[in-house]
Length: 171
Image 1: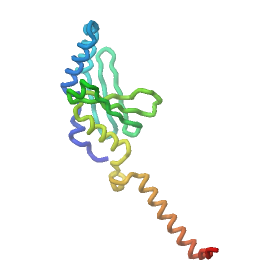
Image 2: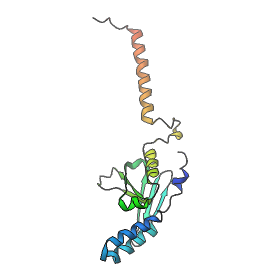
Image 3: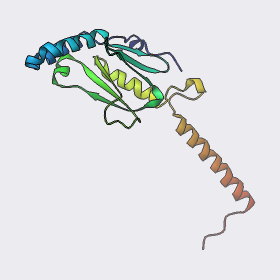
Image 4: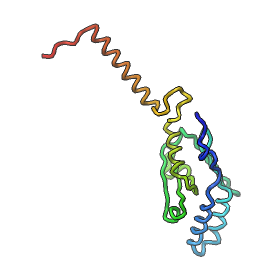
């Protein structure tokens, strides 16, 4: 596969505006602020992303460390979510789903202003448009190439059959 786009490869941490979003959400919880704020603080400061040739990786947590690794092949669907506060801050979430059978997203990439570019990149990788390594035209997916080869073979078979037995006249 070709190299990752520099804008995607350089993403390692959420944007600082995510901390602002977390602060606003914590303030909206009222008295629960004393519990919610430390949780969101540690989540923000430990949240890390990594995009590489195999997939996307996300980890966070101090006491309860959580790590999610998804290969591009496992990705089934991608959704964008941007609430009122997120839109105001210019942020959005990329929800990545797999065929694991869960109703929720396997991974939520949050706190990035370039969320649409990330969605487009993930769609490109999950659909296999990056096929230069296989010697195929990158603009033509593998299925389309296979279908064209089958259609060409069927045309050759039809021509060969017409040479052996000419078509019967129409009644």
